Image (cartoon, one colour):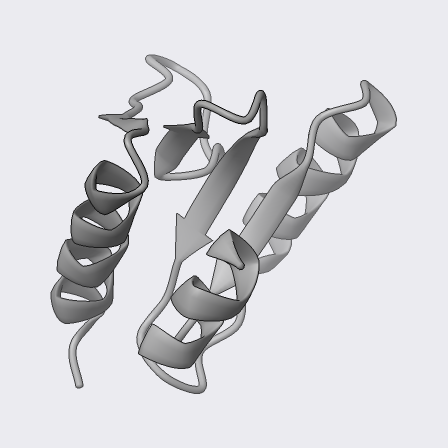
Length: 88
């Protein structure tokens, strides 16, 4: 399975739940998560997508931890099951 297939499933599921999803690019800042998920039940979180079995790179892990310290929820997802688990 490819990362883009997991991403397509995430986009589909968020829309099915009535939510919005945004692809995010931080100009001049490496390591930021790929997507911002906004759900109608007031859940908001960032998603870093990976191919199955892949982990976030060290610079991504550092950025995710910085964001978490600021109260942001950051999820790293590497499977279809992971998408379904995070979305509940």
